[in-house]
Length: 280
Ligand SMILES: Nc1ncnc2c1ncn2[C@@H]1O[C@H](COP(=O)(O)OP(=O)(O)OP(=O)(O)O)[C@@H](O)[C@H]1O
Image (tube, rainbow, N blue to C red; front, side, top):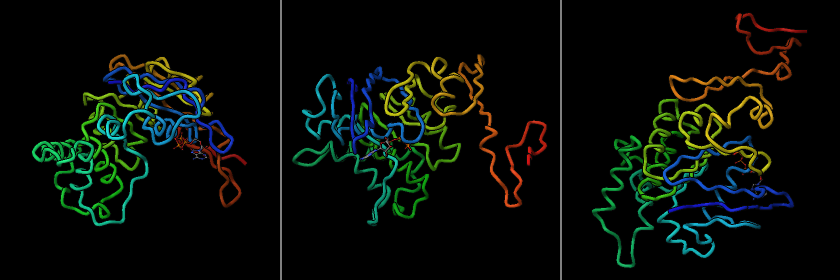
């Protein structure tokens, strides 16, 4: 299976939101989609899921334009975890996860044993077994996020699209979630803001800036101080850690981001000598 974006552009309100993007994840890879707020990550994921149609170019599922693939086949193959999932209805966590089985139902129903097994496994993988009977709207933000991921896993897709899946998660669950995603025998495209998580877990990175791809490749090729300065306007130090086999990014707070205090003084970040930087 493959899900590729080929020279995809998407225009909205007169602006080019996604600008001639080609993305061809290798089977089994985890591809990190990076870029500042508004750079087009969510829009590209929506295009790759077929929720919106490209203005030009095409998204191909196994070489076939997504627009001509039946919705049901897309749903069996591609699962999405979006940023904003919500419901007001009284639905239990297990039932949310079970929604992932809908694409597998035929006209005469589904395979109940396979459905139960997939739901149980997805709840276990996301550490939500003990929440199975709890109502969705009583979950914390992080638990809701994990329930959405469990729903996507129950779908048993070959392609997984995740839009900032670590939002709301504490550090342990961020690490667990991304390590789960990378362990699964799936091809994943995951929009991330945390460059170190991206370096730690992604096989390949693609960086978007104003809708266009400005860098792509292995994390240690992509994450350079020059790229980070150009795209995020932030000074960064990038260290190669041979023991861990990855790069680590640390950031330099910028002096011009110093904020005025109520007493008129301007406070910047703490220096490494631990004395507060205060200038008048
Ligand atoms: N339906 C739409 N109509 C008009 N503008 C849109 C639409 N969808 C997205 N945009 C604009 O396209 C740009 C890219 O948005 P998008 O949500 O894809 O960025 P993003 O990289 O995911 O951002 P973030 O990191 O903040 O989630 C933004 O400027 C947004 O306002």
